[in-house]
Length: 378
Image (cartoon, rainbow, N blue to C red; front, side, top):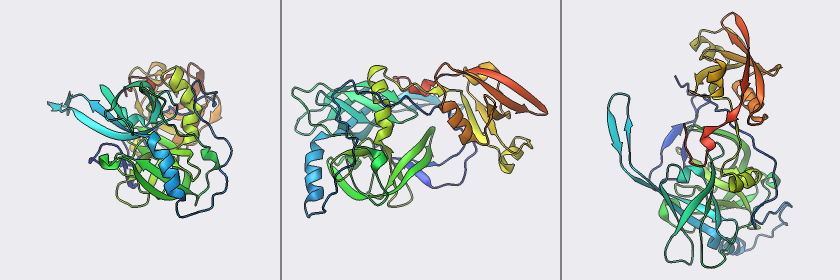
């Protein structure tokens, strides 16, 4: 039932030695975006809101930045238990797995930022820190499936080195950047490039990234969760994905995305995301023909998730959502934007075209289950 547009193959850069290529897709835009405004940090995180000073490129500038930053970059190892799954006919066993990624320390008492996909499904997590002979057991403090962010906590015997969080809104295309991480298990690997684009939307699996930084700094499996730095040593992004069949196309979550939700991750363990519970595609001639429709705008419902607000309200596959609270929606993305602007628990009125009928359905938005601290994706 899933419609996939022809697009560049992408890979989430995490499991060491195992790059999985996924087709970029426009269908099933899971309606779980947004988040609260940036609040004061409940821990000792260094925020830098001003633009970094102009840097004079010297022979050792990048080496100096790296030397200062590397002690705060960590290796994250997630142990994922085995399970039994089914292909629809026969059960099969999935063996235990180990996933290696990166992260960076944001407070001296041991709070660490990484990607949710690095630790998703883990029964235990370990963090290796420069200068310590043995890894630390890590506790998952909070995670957001939709934003692909996670915060871990370790207990170290002394204060840990940290990285300051910069201002990704101040980045410019052509600006130098530095990626540090542990690709293929090779710790403290540094690559250099420039910001090659901003505001890139990508869909990888069930995650819809809305506003990624694009860099030509080489990013490889194992880099996920590591910092993307400017020449002042400030974190401007979180390395997240690479293009599997190309070169010079890496992607990072802007650090301001993390800054906006860090308080929720630390205090609630999740990020409040309004959830309607449908997968949608934009109405166009090809999609409309697939569902036997003739309407010319709106969001076609391609999936209704069991137990979701949409299911409780009576939405059906093939319905076309044309308006939210009386305001027209012209596409799937317009519907995503309309839902993301609401709050969890808010009631919205959907205008729905079903065959020759026009229906008005009242829906109370719920918290997206993918954002629960357990990292479940139900």
